[in-house]
Length: 398
Image (cartoon, rainbow, N blue to C red; front, side, top):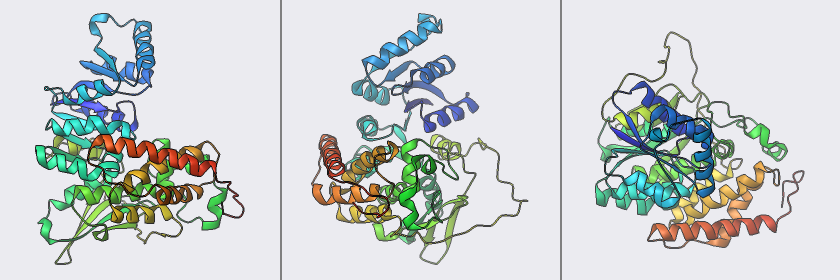
């Protein structure tokens, strides 16, 4: 199987390459697509010998070229080098490619993923924005072109496995688990005092900065609710979130006879990545198996939707429909950047998103181009909301 990885230098991309490393007889790399982390990309090129390597822009391409020269890599060993959006699409739609891992953070990964679907590739979906920003358009394309989309997020991947246990029409609800993040037991008023450094300490998963902050605010779980609605054709009322700090159970599906099927595995992203790459086969585990001789306790509780308002906003945006979830994602990204830069306190992320949704409204989007335009407009609205607000952490008000 030949693979293109969109986002090869991020955490999902690195884990995907480790699965490839463990199954070299089954997988080969056609293309590695990265942004500007050319040092990591160069080392990946040396090890995996892709036919194509793509970076964000001309500046990154020049740096990659210089880095390969400094490493004294013979030109005959270089892949074809390219940059920009068109090159990303070409890498994802190449005729020889069988599987595309969509792991570029943000809407930057949307066009290449959409075109991979139109080219009838199997897509491993690790990019939340693809469905959060344009779920209807993307899933319509999956059906039209008979493409195969396997979710890589641990919760959706777990749900995908649970759905194999019964008939879809017999499903009464899907339960997505959430660790609760580092502030599950923190008093609501104390959240105004949280620093970016504290918020970046996730208790379970090792992830990039934005997704770690989204986990701390439970926005990430809100995005997963939206994704689940599109992936599994469910209304929001049938997708529930349950806080499970141990993160051993990733998802549960309840059937109409009251049976609940749960998917349990190690908290390591190589598990769902390998599942997506080998489905419907199951290869040997890429990580140590769970040790069932050890005593363990599993805890479950309902999320506090007043404390974690972004999760509530996600449900509301999905119910509203149209471009509301695209705006939700764009505003959150802008607000998270402001928090990480120390310009706003943590709860101000939710306030910024809520105000942006109110100002931007919901529009009808028919194409990926429409989604990109709405995303850009929503970001501008979010920046204006931030510029017009003065946050006072002590009072918890704008």
